[in-house]
Image 1 (spheres, rainbow, N blue to C red):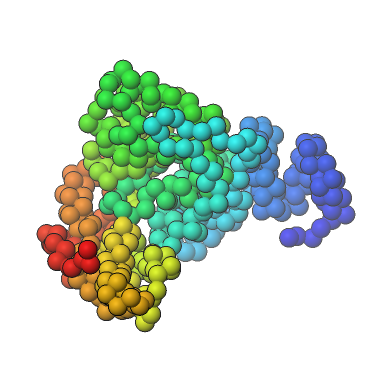
Image 2 (spheres, rainbow, N blue to C red):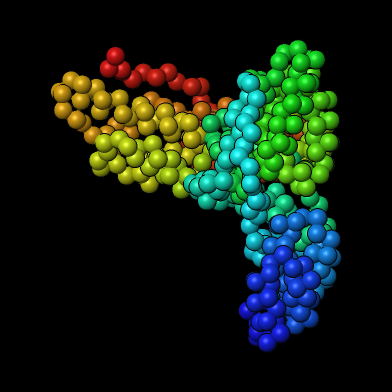
Amino acid sequence: MGHETPLIASLRAAVGAAPDDALLRIRLWELLLAHDRVDEAVAEITVALRRDPGDGQAKALMARAMTLTPARVSAHVQDSAPEFDCQRAENELADVVIPCTLGRTQAPTGGLPGVGEVEDAGQVRLADVGGMIETKQRLEAAFLAPLRSPALCEPYGKRMPGGLLLYGPPGCGKTFIARAVAGELGARFMNVSVTDALDTSVRRSGRDLRVVFEAARRNAPCVLFLDELDALAERCHVSRLLAELDDGHTAAEEGVFVLAATSHPWNVAGALRSPGRLDRTVLVPPPDGPAREYIFRHHLRDRPVAGVHLRAMARRTAGYSGADLANLCDTAAEPALCGAVATGAPRVIRSEDLAAALARVPPSTGHWFESARKAAMSANDGGMYDDLFTYLRRSEKRRPTLSRMTSPTHSNGGKSCN
């Protein structure tokens, strides 16, 4: 913090005593800008915009603040790269933006018959997602940062995002990540499985979809999560969904944020991914090493375990989905349970149990990546699948694991104690 002049100190105290006095706040911001304390002014104005995104004076001063900062940002970029780096700029902006915590004064009003309940997901954050650093950084830069402070993005030519499409192999945590995004936004979470929620009748389906969006608006701020989005391509709901997405072009103001997930993004109608709709895509790949260790620890935490080296197991399970790892832990528990039943005495799960389970439980993601590679080769318009190709290139270094991933699924030849 810069030198605190008596006037600035007095104004800070006055604003603290009367936080609703707009004139005092504006005078404080103007003084901070006049004294070249731009970062402090941006932080103060961001707080006001969180409370009232439509505050015209706050937006105007934020725009003025940004005119004072490009020289500093440009100098930083020129020192490190010859061209402007949008990713770097977004990361720098994220460092000075206070996380959004939209206020709520009413309890959730509930979901719909046949549709999931509206959840208060405020306690789940991206920090609760083990590992997956690059995925979380992509979510932050592409979706969360612009929503938290739209005024900061305008000088960089970055528009507000529409919706977000998560894609990747089944069982890799897309729903949990969507719930964590809701937590980051301070929003409720409404999970809608398209195939379960919508009637097969075209007339009924259009009405049901409209009711789903209305329920999300009643519970704003709310993340509306549309699971199994590719099912829409096999039905007649695309036009209705397009209408709802277009009606929600002011989602940031209405407080309804649309997220969707699919394991088959190449089956999703291209119109759904156009600007202002589901125009941001993020690959959710199989968990990385730290995430796999986290998942092992989670699934073994309440079981009797001894002598298990979780980090070594994490290294041996590249390409396994989170669901695969849960299955592996269940399979490793079977011999211990059978031994306990046979002897009447507890028997711990040992490292050799996990090693035996590893031979019986293959990763399930190999076939998905083979299909994804073929589909994406001819459908990478606008770079939608760039992150997929980056992941595949890195995976080439794990050729033995990948060959196993793409081999036919072998049967579970293990024994059961039934």
